[in-house]
Image 1 (cartoon, rainbow, N blue to C red):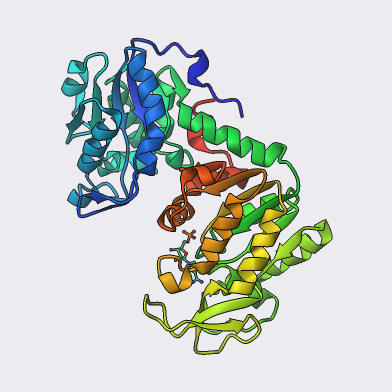
Image 2: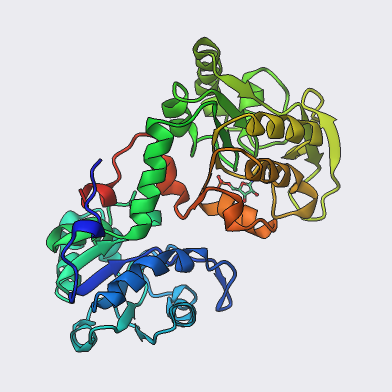
Length: 394
Ligand code: AMP
């Protein structure tokens, strides 16, 4: 899909509405991972250097159209100001901010309050979204879409707004799309995909779409138990999506027919309950006790995954191999991240929890070729879906 980029756009001296993804984890006003703010700086700097005034529109969490103090972007304004080194004016209104936007001068930055406090932003009613988009469009005269983590959403500030003003994709979206194009069009081989995380239902579309493109598919995390169940293996109290077992059985058959190497764990770290101090026990994947649940892949599996990963030239990874938030169940994710960092080729970590996991486990961003800022967005791209935010910028 050809998106318009800033390279050929006439954005100099404009009042730019910049849609960013500043959806960072915040607890009690403290940001624990500012990766998405950092990823937004490149476009912002470029606009300031071009004498633009910049009105930033962004969201935080899912307030569902209500004002929720804990989901205010105010702490983000403060962090952004530190990182960019220029004052960031914060407006506690999104709708109704015309005056403060009009007063903004070239070189100045205005961050509007969480756009999802407006119910029209995420409304299913196109006319409601359009009404909000029109109001925000009146704050400026050029639109830059750079919130990659939200491009799969048909939301007012992502879709309708982009169509109301001259527009282009920012540097972050341009970079993300280039990486995803490489993964879907001409990856160096062998090409491996490693998937984990809680649910098969979130990833089944990606698996189906990528199955005929990859050489190796490794599955871990909570989702692996639906795979083991599909192979007739007992999984005790582990997470299983029973309704998806037939689809997973078909994936296993298709993978064999296509010559895709399916890599599943051979040992599992189990525990009696889902808790940080649950007692871990290592078992073979064929001996998961009825009263225990699998919370991580075992060390033999982690080594198996690592050696498969290291033999690839391109690897895409999304989803932790276990409950990495609990130290006793973080080993599988750590070993896989380590292997990825040693690949002689292109490695892409796909957003959300996987990005948080690698940072929490002490890896640096440059241990990988690319860490995507959008988990859901990159998965939907790889599923082959049209992403509204990219369609609007095409
Ligand atoms: P996702 O958002 O689907 O990528 O899922 C990420 C979450 O999956 C993380 O919070 C992990 O703790 C969780 N997870 C990974 N492995 C397991 C497992 N074996 N059982 C339950 N949850 C898991």
